[in-house]
Amino acid sequence: MQFARRVTERCDFLAGVRSCDWGTVPTAPAGYGGYVYSTRYSLDEVRRMPNFTDFSDTVVDGRRAVKYTPVGKGFVERCDIAWGTSFGSIWVTIARSSSVSGAIDNCGLVEKWARLVYRNAPK
Image 1: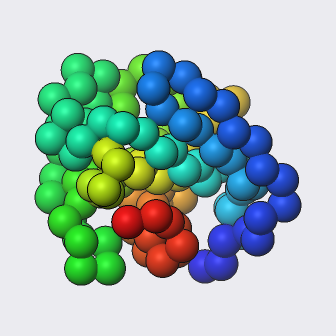
Image 2 (image 1 turned 30 degrees about the vertical axis):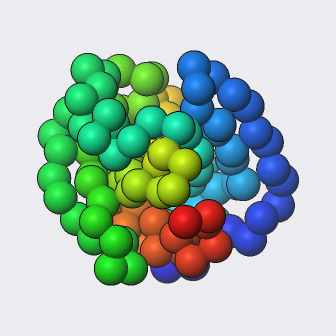
Image 3 (image 1 turned 90 degrees about the vertical axis):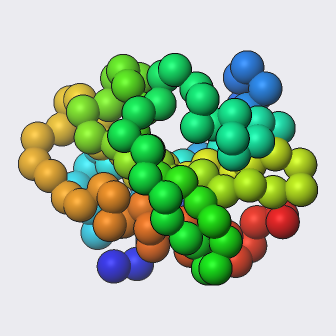
C-alpha cells in the first residue's frame, strides 16, 4: 500500500500539540486520513493521557514506541502510534471519519505510516 505524496500541508497548534495534515491514503476509501502530530509531551506523558486507551508497546525503525486508541474524537476507527524525540514526541494517525462505511486495517496501516514519517521526522 502506498501513501499519498505531500499534496497540501495544513498545520495547527492545539493544546501544546502541533497538528499537520498532508493528505490521505489514496488506495483507501474516501473518508480516511493520515495525520502527523508533533508535541512537547514525553512518551511517558502520552501513556498517562486519560483520552487515550488500549496501549501496546511497539517499535518503529528500532525506536521504542507505543500504539494506542484515542477515545471519542469523532472517529469510528482510528489507530495511533507515538515515539519519543529530543523535544517530546511525534504521533501518527490513520483514521476513518464516522460518515464512512467499510473498513480497512487502520493499525496495520499506521505501522507503515509511522515508518515513513519516522525516516523524515526530527529525532
